[in-house]
Length: 207
Image 1 (cartoon, rainbow, N blue to C red):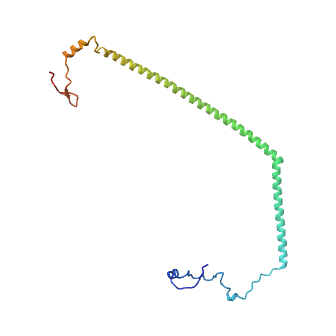
Image 2: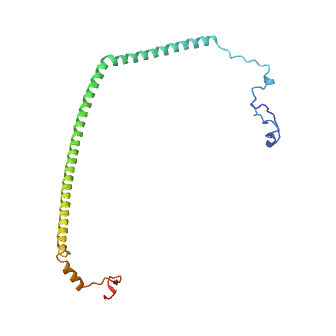
């Protein structure tokens, strides 16, 4: 609650000015805890409503019976729950449950064996396919390598034949004089110019 509650007709800007305290209108029909008692109720004394003794005894008796009945029901439900749990753990229900668990275990093991067998067959087929593919790839690689080697040998043989053919025109000590005479008898002029088509357009005259 605010420290000061007064009625004022001053504008809000004046009421909220730093020079004044917080000024607000009180809520109509409600008063604070510090307000005194109203004058019209100053001499009023609160008295509890009258209680019928007979009715009080009846209500107390009924309340006691209700608590006894509810306690008995809770104990009965608890006893039934404990008995059922005991029968499940040590009685005929436990044997039945153990039998059901054994049957379920056998069925699960059978399913597991069948699933393992199915996966093993799939794995064997996959391994066979991968082995066949690897073998085919290896054979293709061997054939390709042999073909490349054969092409390489043919190319080298062709180079050797070409070199043997070119060796006929090599200058040796035996034909050195003959080649010199042929060069002097057939001089060649390499001082020429060509156009974009590669044709000789200009050439100097040998002297």
